Image (tube, rainbow, N blue to C red):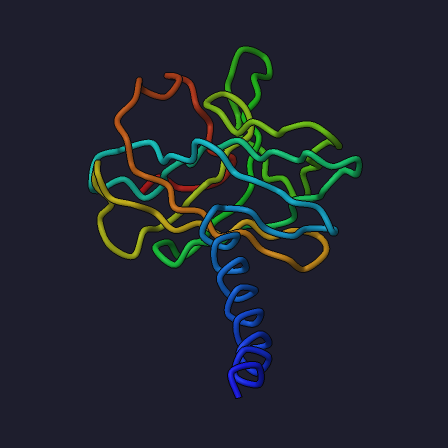
Length: 170
């Protein structure tokens, strides 16, 4: 009888072990995208005055595999809209351009940083303050998604001549 209890216990133990491993991967910030393990590091959202209708989020997307991964969208339940953007300077004026797709190179990383790629978070559903956490979901071309928690932090101000490409600030 002891043997049958042990043998009946093994499948249950394996299922529990598998569930535990899957849960650990989900909580560690690792997701499957195009069959690759994509990881996000150092996510944060720039703090702004409570009345501000737009915020920027920054992070690093790591792709340790031999195949490029395409980021095609972003969402946040705390905002009415979220988009992928690229800041660039044209004729001495900083502008933002919406990006429909951004590739994360094979065995490389994509850095979202002030003055470059960023997640544009628009129209918060409630005021966002320093110390809050913003939930962001990155969407990939293979249909997979990666949930990220980004703390809201104070930083240096935005460039003085930032043009928001038709996005109203109020």
